[in-house]
Amino acid sequence: MNIDNTHIAVGKYLVSPLAKPQGEGLYAASVSIRSGQGSATHDRVMRFSGLFDSAAAAVHYATEHALGWIQERSCPACA
Image (tube, rainbow, N blue to C red; front, side, top):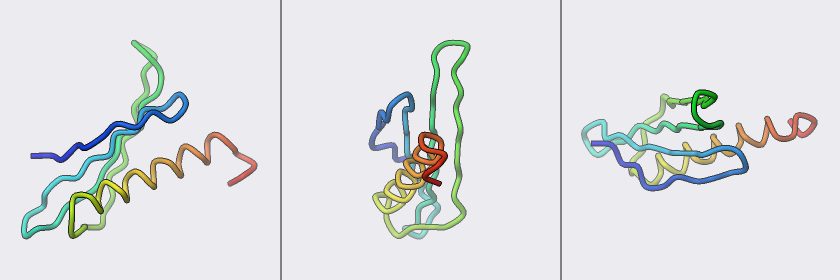
């Protein structure tokens, strides 16, 4: 079972963080960052190596990293 609490629209991107139970009360984090439509859809998936004590912490971590990735692409001079 995966825990997928929310999808967040950020400009042209759709951010979908995910927490996956790993046993013993720990969770892995990943995130999908989708852009485009139809045959021009691009989906970047990031999987993180750390484990988290709660699904909420995993989702928060994944969301923050996705937002940082989007910010880097939106403002190259800011990076």
